[in-house]
Image 1 (spheres, rainbow, N blue to C red):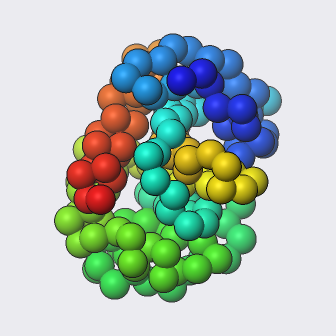
Image 2: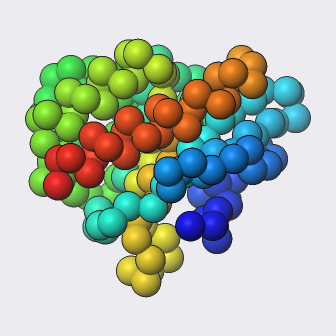
Length: 162
């Protein structure tokens, strides 16, 4: 699968300039840098399913990198609600599609490898599967490289919950 047609920068991180790093197991890794030299590593993978709308989770431990339009209400899983800010137009998408087990796994991944920003982007229409983006600040190239593994963990947890 080639790099997504919609660039990561145009999806959520407009102040970063991105370049492809590498791909593995269907995950594409990009490295972005802003004008201040801050580096963001972003993994992207196509999902086999549509989530129904755009959903973004930003770790409460992360600096505010997303333009959170409307912080949605709680999902109903305390650890998840404590760990993430949820941005979506329809909180029922999260409540209906994200099981307790998946929420617990996302919290565990965020604690181990975060702070994370996780975006489910359905694109402009339903003609392509939803793209999963997993982003985190990267202090060095090793952190950038390991982000592909973090993305695979999130992807595996999501697919196992289907």
